[in-house]
Image 1 (tube, rainbow, N blue to C red):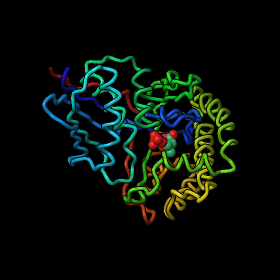
Image 2: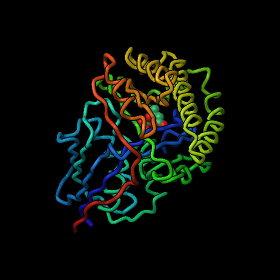
Image 3: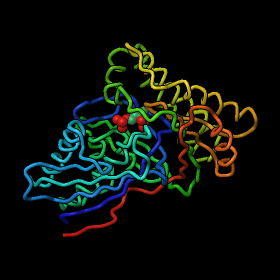
Amino acid sequence: MSKSTAIAHANIALVKYWGKRDHNLNLPAVGSISVTLDGLHSKTTVELAPEASADQFILNGREANEKQAARTSAFIDKIRRMSGSDKRVRVISDNNFPTGAGLASSASGFAALTLAATRAFNLRLAADLLSGLAREGSGSAARSIFGGYVEMEIGTESDGRDAVAKPLFPSEHWPLRLLILITSEAEKKIGSTEGMNLTARTSPYYDTWIHSSLEDLQNMRDAIAARDFQQMGEIAEFSCLKMHGLAMSANPGLIYWNEVTIELIHAVRNLRSQGIPAYFTIDAGPQVKVICQPEDVAVIREKLSQMDGVINILESGLGPKAYIIGEND
Ligand code: PMV
């Protein structure tokens, strides 16, 4: 194929990844467990451009900036090396969620790019190899290759061959829902890679974080297997707050929240005290993701939408693995 289009969905970690054991290969220092979201996806077309002298990237309708272009070109270089081709590419990628919504799109973006680019260069990789390759683009992208409940393994091999994600359960196993509360549209100042490196270098809690993650992973697997909403939610909040506490303990401390983030943490806990089951999780930014069961979505949405500072609410169920939607020669 010389042109291929793929769709990959965003994911949200219930047990968080923060820290790398190898920077070149982008190997995680801790495992993580996520859910893939059906409501948020990236659609990416990769076309070989034999006449072109440079790669071209159009992201959400705009020419990529220098930093994005350099990162994406370096990633495509890996696929060029694998396929033995030096052809340049034209990449067009769009998210179906609002850009500037302050939501990281690197997971769905790199997963869709991995699938579309490998196919455009005529490589047909098994899902675990796609996941390992996506990981080299962005750690969380390894998980977006799969649908439903997904676990990212840290692996033990030094070449990163076994640092790949694997599906734990399909979406139908337990159709949870997520509300994504946007509290700021500003781009974050410190990206996850920089934040992870600073944390590993300076936080006195880093080793404890690494060791304590094993228990969280086991407890989360058990909670999902048993569809135990309370256990799942409690571990998700624990892992989230532990990750943010760790980031705050870096020097200088990393604070990804704003005042609305904190208001929402309290609001979600208040909902629980009123008997409405809901739990929060937060990534390296100020948006709050609320995990809930389908029957409670309407009331939770109603209550949280009234809070000052909530700019927008996106809603999602659990989604499928990354897939190809079109190919041409
Ligand atoms: O994929 P990255 O390198 O942007 O790291 C993602 C880190 C968190 O979103 C904060 C946690 C996670 O596991 O997704």
